Image (cartoon, rainbow, N blue to C red):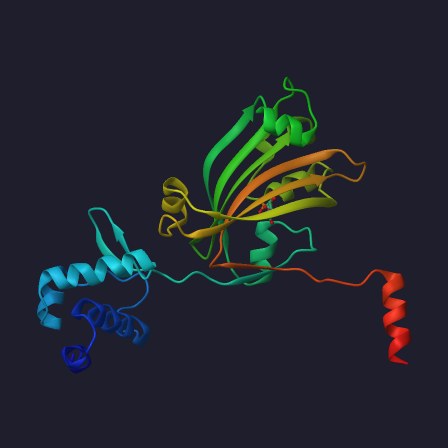
Amino acid sequence: MTELRAIRAERKPLFASVSAALKREIASGRFAQSDLLPGERELSQMLEVSRTTLRRAIAGLIEEGVLVHRHGAGTFVRRSPPHVEQPLSRLTSFTEDMRLRGLAASSKVIERGAFLPTPEESMMLDIALSEAVFRLSRLRLADGVPMAIERAAVPMRFLGEAERVGDSLYAALEASGYRPVRAVQRLRAVVIGAPEAALLDIPEGSPALDIHRVAYVADGRRVEFTRSTYRSDTYDFVAELTLPPNARQRAEGAQR
Ligand code: 16G
């Protein structure tokens, strides 16, 4: 605790020094990821600061996403999520992507079943409003850490029965002979609202990536429309860029 006491000698506002000291303790492993912080009384005694100063420091760290408050349970050190680099040119599934990185994929189902499509789903899938879709909305996790919320819609005709879908949507589509072979994806930066922030375990107002994917089967029919919200602190989407062939020939010629 000598290090924590040294905060009194620093020339910052006291609460800022308390935040910095708590961050150092987290980085050093004294308070491990996912650990419950000691109670307010204990911490304020340890740090020799008032509870008001401590509360101010903790509130700041919650806002920064270093700590997380769970109702009725206390304040925890947030577990830092795995960082994933995702090539934008490969049409893979979440389960496959995580497996390739040695991470365990899991999901929490938010909504699942056969429904009539919304006007947006019917337009994006190019189907009639009367044609049923299988809708699967999930929170996707890697090694137990929330990474994304995905809301997928697939025309029922590609799946046969909803029961066919297990942990992986793409595995189910592959089993029924309709694995997507091509997809068009649109990415956009968004600011996260309260309900999604709570699911993703990040502070409200954090930046996130909003991704729309329309995927096609070999004969050109649309098989999937998925709207996803990805945590921007866990995902880097990486695209490889190439010159068109004629410009490439010119560039290579100039090098000779
Ligand atoms: C990916 C896809 C999503 C697809 C899901 C299937 C992006 C942005 N999205 O997460 O469109 O539905 O994989 O995953 O990459 P699953 O087979 O594990 O259910």
